[in-house]
Image 1 (cartoon, one colour):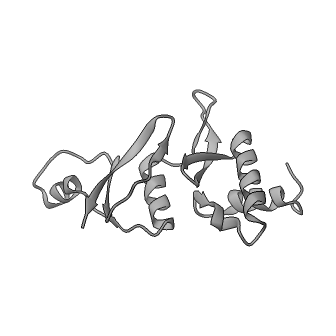
Image 2: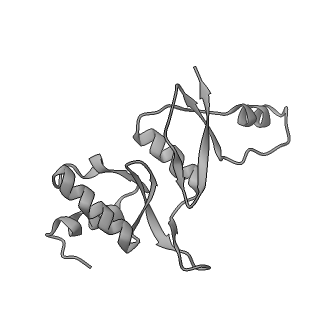
Length: 137
């Protein structure tokens, strides 16, 4: 592991100790410059400490006990909601969630569809699995 006094050490320490699982480059702007932080984040992705789940959005990662591959620490719907909150996008319940909560449907929502207020053109996911968005005005 890197020494804590280096930029990589400071970012690694912050990622490991943070209560949140989703990070953007702006989370580390108080530590170093834009390019330096981006370089360190790319190194941490290669090392398996972070995983890229969207454009400029990273999640803390762990090794899978089954396959040994690097996977996110939390399920994808939770990461997507955390990322949207961090990006300032308002989350709303989807139609399926409303129907289920009101007792109009017995179909349990999967969480792979997230209701958002306004338009969003981001893709959030990893390994070919993405969250889709249901837009509300």
